[in-house]
Amino acid sequence: MTGKHVAFIGGDARQLEVIKSCLSLDAKVSLIGFENLQSPFSGASNREISPELFATVDMLILPILGTDEEGHVDSIFTTRTLVLTEADMRALPSHAVVYAGIAKSYLKNLCEEVSIRLVELLKRDDVAIYNSIPTMEGALMMAIQHTNITIHDSTSMVLGLGRVGVTLCRSLHALGARVKVGVRKQSHVARCVEMGLKPFLMGELTDEVRDVDILFNTIPAKVVTEAVLKEMPYSAVIIDLASKPGGVDFAYAEKRGIKALLAPSLPGIVAPKTAGKILAQTMTRLLAKEFGEEGSSP
Amino acid sequence: MTGKHVAFIGGDARQLEVIKSCLSLDAKVSLIGFENLQSPFSGASNREISPELFATVDMLILPILGTDEEGHVDSIFTTRTLVLTEADMRALPSHAVVYAGIAKSYLKNLCEEVSIRLVELLKRDDVAIYNSIPTMEGALMMAIQHTNITIHDSTSMVLGLGRVGVTLCRSLHALGARVKVGVRKQSHVARCVEMGLKPFLMGELTDEVRDVDILFNTIPAKVVTEAVLKEMPYSAVIIDLASKPGGVDFAYAEKRGIKALLAPSLPGIVAPKTAGKILAQTMTRLLAKEFGEEGSSP
Image 1 (cartoon, helix red, strand yellow):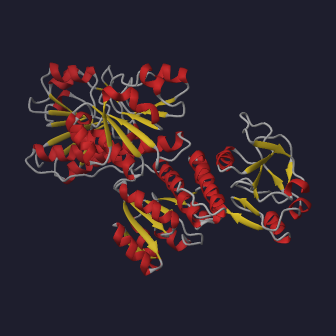
Image 2 (tube, each protein chain N blue to C red):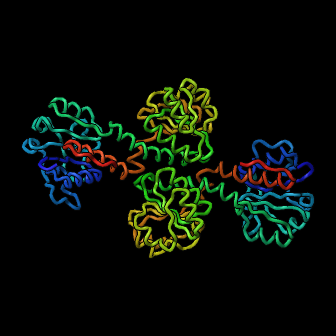
Image 3 (tube, rainbow over the protein chains, first blue to last red):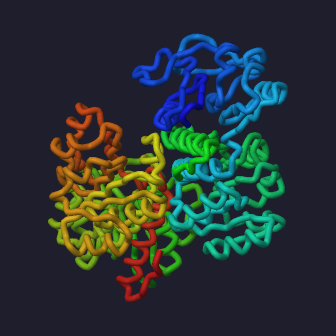
């Protein structure tokens, strides 16, 4: 990355790994909002947001959460307020790329208006697969905590065989659960059979839930409806891993007395260090690739 | 069990499964301290402790915790105080057998004095193996909760390849950890190799702990000493599953800033229903065997 200029604006401990990588790849590194860093990086310089600086930047790296809807950028390494404005962004060279974990509409609109490419890391398929590991471990933790039985020898159900579904099914199976999997595609039925799981088509859900001890939902649509909940044992526990507002009729579950939990964003909670490593390694790999080098796998 | 007389004194929900089994095996069942049972068993009669009753009893079944050191027996189904005295116990026929999960010295001495056989279920090898499952799940839960990394891709260490050790190693391996196992016997080294684990001899512990993320101890002896703790990374987390007082120098771990947790008796905490089922099925199998029948496996 010799001769390339990478600017970091704000963030938390997770960005430090990326900064380290950029420096080791010989990039020019500018840090904005990192004044209070306990051990400053030699080779990186502390700067302010300005059109003059931005005019020389090849890559602008924002924190995982990007900006808020007013353009504020969070940083745990400064007490100052950082704001990303259109005037600054317009100064970026047209080949520049902006990286963030996810982007709210403020950042999306801004990048669109100034015609700068925006990469949302958390939307990448590889990141979602790596993140399914801490998500699965968080889901196991919740299942162990909130049931009075073991996962071993339980009848566990997973709805959806996507990136989280596959990881979860494999782990539940390895821990000795009987794993029933609700899917829609015949290719997913086949994959379940290959993995030693018991697939069923989502149309059969109402019949299939009758013997369930623990239900994990990964489908971001209202699939665990009143009709489904009516057939479930009262002792069942539901863990909803789908993005908000989840796939469970929580009001009816409560009415029927079935414990249903909406899992928060688990990677940052159960394994913040691993979650940071996933993002840092992905970003490092992307940066290296931009310059024709092949990144190493995390 | 036709013609046999089984008396239950006290206990909790776990005893109900055993009572059900005895009734289904056609035994005569007396219940002491079960007056407040919400749905009484038809076929069982509520009785009081007395030498007259005990003289006709073939099996006396106490709660998991047996008695306290004053002979009190706990029951969640009565508000009365139940006490087991020598006068009552002396009335038991010589062929009678007393069952409890574990026995304190009061109960042990009492049975010895009146020459009645006492069976402590939790000391049985099969029960210890079944119980290793909820213990393992509780240990996984603690590891997920108390570290900032995933078990997956961690370097996890298990000390001891006994009943809990085997179960834990297998699960950690299945979840994607690199599992190092401290053992003493060459047969255990061989078993580790067969299971895809990385064995080492306990004499090498001080060298082997240097790269450990999570250490699970199952050896009931002071093995994680000051010398060992000195070589561990500060970020490591220790989970001690050995019976009290555990195998870790907790005072020195705290001094060095290493998080070390003494795991409580996990089966009853993370999976009370499963733990109850394990004891109920074992007791049912034992009772059936006393009468020449073969019990089914749990």
